[in-house]
Amino acid sequence: MKKQTAFRLLTLLSLTGLALPAHADTAPDDFLGPDDCRALSPDCKCSDAPMLELLLKDQSKALDAWDATADAIAMPGGPATMEAAVQDFHSRFPGDTRIADQFAACDTIDEGGHNLTKIAGVSIRKGGAALDSCFCKQFCEDAVNATIIHEDVHFKFAFEAMLEMITSSVACKLGELEQSYCDTLLARQLARSEQYAHAAAIESMQDSLDELRASDPDMPDMECTWEPLPDMVTRVTPPAPPAPSGLWQRIELLADRFIHGAARAG
Image (spheres, rainbow, N blue to C red):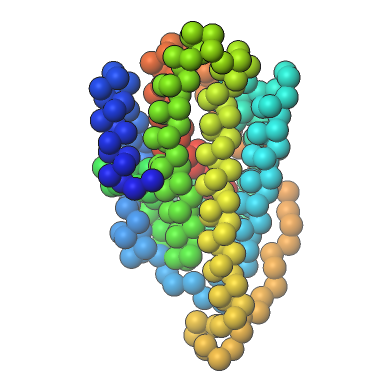
């Protein structure tokens, strides 16, 4: 979806009285836009390949977990809310601590404003993805680009999801849709957004690793070779916040989740 189309949808939402609230811009003000982030990020070299490979594996495991969560949502008695879907995902996917450790090694991590569980999000003011400066400095550019792609997918999907929610809400209230469809709409949208975003990031990182295997950036006539990082026990991600009670709070949470993309260090 092009940005022009996205702004038209925002206008439509505004006319219907359900415009995205101003604070739906979930990325902190000090998060950097794509170009500023790339300016801090070093070029990827052979020495970065093990971490890129680890990120790829972590994202692949996350996608598998979201696939399983999406299947669970479709089952009777499965997670029916966004919060339940997030909890189901976390029960299937703890992040790899080495990714958080590399982020935490940033030289400005003690200055405040850095959150190991929120390294990227979406800023409407910046027109898409926004990233923590420590993530930009600690990970090479291909990892940054994959994260930008991930967040941009959430950004584009957010408008489609909001429009679907509005139109479906009317049909649900009129009894024109199955109640099970209505009850799980937000959970299914969240899972779908995460599936799309992870798949796009995985493809980007796989392409980057393929390029490194084919040619060493420092010695183009040579191939990159490396020893993969071993598997290890991973940390458990914090649980999701409580479910909102009112319709407006549900709309705000939907905007927050899809624009933010549930960004995390893993």
